[in-house]
Length: 503
Image (tube, one colour):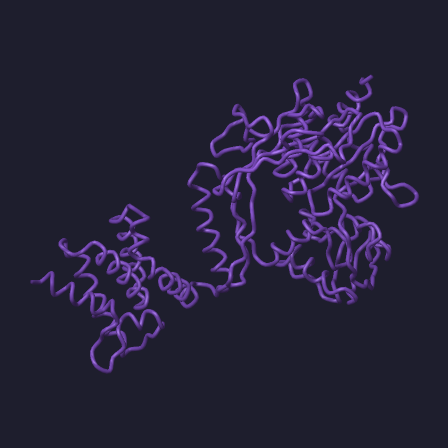
């Protein structure tokens, strides 16, 4: 009799049926109402939920919902320890997470909302709601990452609106701004201009690499904003003006810059010629070309084709394609670039929940008749690995350098309706022409088979110091002979030696 009575009382609470003139406990929880008058009703509801939870004969579905609502009531009443105890017990007594979610799924939004409210109202320091939401999303993603299997930490990401915009800039290869790349000096905390992009407003105004930004529009960038804050303040609508105050040695200089659409080039040569075009010839005597692909964007295939046409017209005898530090980018553009070097056969096979698709090379538009070297390193990743694996498997190029990063997943961006950002989720995996997957799975060591490895006899591993020197030498938009002379590029030397030895 007792069990039936408790079940009836519990169902009354769950269905929102309350005494005349009073809001139900459910309504109090859903609407966030809490006063001295409602406190008693919440306490009564908690007692009912506790009795249901303790009744061994009660329906398990009802117990699960009662346990969750008990936690919600205690949160509302400000009894944090008891709330935590109730919620922890819920997960302990219902180890089957799928069944548990099915039982309490409709209550999860209320639980999360109440958690956020309690933190906002009672945490030792003031917190920003948007930051709490981002933290919660990242915690969920981190939990999935930690489950092991195919994903590593970071393969699935939550991107805030600023991060999404930044990613789109790289893919679309265009931005409204002044055309200056920035970094933070770790020693001084100053914002340093690493390079003004060729023909950009910053370049035309005379801004130099190494200039240190002191103020933007007469205001110092707050320390807590650092690089992200500076970038946000400098970018803006085309045609608007931004004033930069910079420190150059012991001088203070002010530049008035009009923002414009700045095109970001992903294909570079060895250095700029006097006519402000890239020089793609590295060794004139042996007619050896050099093309550096910094990332894979929407315009990368067209940029690559323009460079290859010029090199072919000049009668090159060999080509170095530098993919070092290339983080990847667009899958379709990576396939298009690989197709420029392979006449036939599979470029890559993509497998996902909906099936698999093999992308085949086309003879038309292929550039051949010369030997090739691919330069790769530990930071060559994702779409860049598709290019490297394809050319290696088809024996179109010799791979020189270091084993690549090992990221063989295709990720897609899914905007969240709330507008707080987007989820970047793995939707499929790619396989090289040989059928192998180059992904570095969780728990893999150097002894396992992952990444794109250099061909036998062509592995040249940089020390950490060498890698820093390499990155410093290649950070400039147009590296000077002096900066390049400071660094001995052993990987590039190996590539040149191979091509020079070819008949």
